[in-house]
Length: 136
Image (cartoon, rainbow, N blue to C red):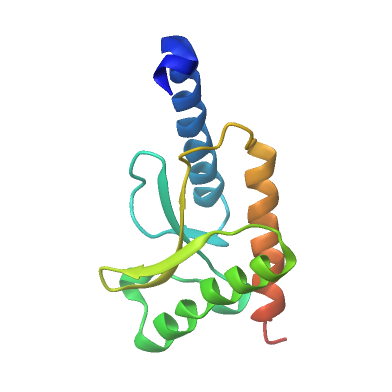
């Protein structure tokens, strides 16, 4: 790959991957509680929860078992719906005592734009609200 892209080309690819990770982290942190980081970002690896309105506010450090059980169901539901509709295929997993969360790694995303990331987050929100509606 290095030979094909050269120093400058490879640098641009890596910079783009980090910019995508920066972008999604900024969107998560400025979401007003719709999304929450599970861990500090590592390179281009970002772990996060979508937190439906019905489960807000959510804070892992103070969440009781009931809240953890409920948030654990969100990522599998959204992933399943996104896979069925062909929106995106994004993995989820529990790790280190944290319930299921999305894990996105920008590793080969030459054609992925900030707008693509924004649309994915918007779709996650729409599906999450559909599957976990607020009690009026």
